[in-house]
Amino acid sequence: MTEQAGPVRVPRGLAGVSVSDTRISKSSSDGSLVYRGYPIAELAAKATFEETAYLVLNGKLPTRGELDSFAATLAGLSGVDGKVFEVMRALGPGAHPIDAIRTGVSALGSIDPARSSPGRQHSIESKMSALAANSRRVPAGEEPRRPGEGRGFAESLLQMLTAREATEFERWVFERVLIFYMEHDMNASTFTVRVVASTLADPYAAASAGLASLKGPLHGGANEAAMEMLLQVKSPGDAKDFVDSTVKQGKKLMGFGHRVYKEFDPRARLCKQYLREMAERRGGDGGIYGVCEAVEGEMWERKRIPPNLDYYAAPIFYLLGIEVPLYTPVFAASRVFGWMAHYNEQVEENKLIRPDSTYIGPTGLTYRPIGERQR
Ligand code: ACO
Image (cartoon, rainbow, N blue to C red; front, side, top):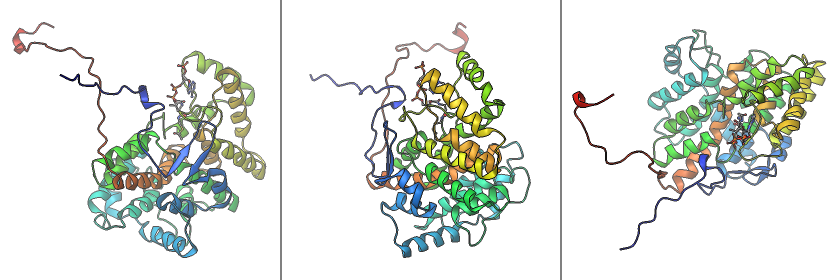
């Protein structure tokens, strides 16, 4: 009789385990990140949000005609039906914004006119922007803000979030941050999306699962947690005590650390430059850049842990005037494009994702009727 091999044991948290081949993006421990072969710094310097989204979804940069058509499709699908907002409004003012978006995406799965058409993924990608921007307003009973006509994806989202006209440089920076948030190989929410896609559930189901995964403070929720943390540090001189006491209490500093990047996160480096330039152009930032740099320095000194994207995206959002509870929704509005690229890649080369586990509980227990059970 041949002995049956047991399941392959993998490290906790699947750290260092490759669960899939992908052609979409790759982050590496040397601090590099590529989308479809293009270095992130190159895209940040030269590409628009729509060009990058097209690249991530289709595997190639668009021609002028393809780009215009893609941008027009997104703009044309961006309006959200009032019925979806009604469902979100029913959640009431205390609703967490990510729960509100997730509820909106679930509702779309049943009532989106595009839900049975090939364009349904673009409908989700495009509508996520208005769902994110209104994820606090609508449950609070306020009127939804609608996407602005003639504006690109990033500009329209920023306008809905802040209801003010940003400067050209602010819009440019916001668009870069969205490009960074769009895609990041096998992170927790993308893996979640791929698990759902592997069951051949529809993309609305996959996107709502991705949102659930993104909500947590160890993933998407970190940008809000990082900002709340930075606001506690009143000046650069307080950074050392703050880092010391947080580490001594065994707590994590939000916006630091990464499963892949151990030396630096290339997105955080670029955001740090943008933040500094924003502060200089404004002629002051209330001291936020100085605090960020001081906390980063203390953290490196003490733990050799670098900041991640969330750490420097958060103060950029702050200076742009975006409310802190909307930071993770902004992340979602961009990441949905990466999720849909992974959804398609999973379905095209599908194998149901169904791992095994090692049972370490008791065995052979005897059932006793309830009256005979001891406490
Ligand atoms: N603050 C303090 N210590 C930290 C931090 C941190 N932010 N991150 C890691 N460490 C320490 C851990 O305590 C652990 O120390 P130990 O070995 O002495 O126990 C060691 O570094 C390894 O940390 P893990 O959490 O095991 O590393 P992992 O790869 O699993 O975690 C993670 C990565 C979850 C991102 C972690 O760094 C973290 O919790 N960071 C804070 C949350 C955060 O910023 N998340 C955003 C991620 S990026 C994104 O979603 C865009």
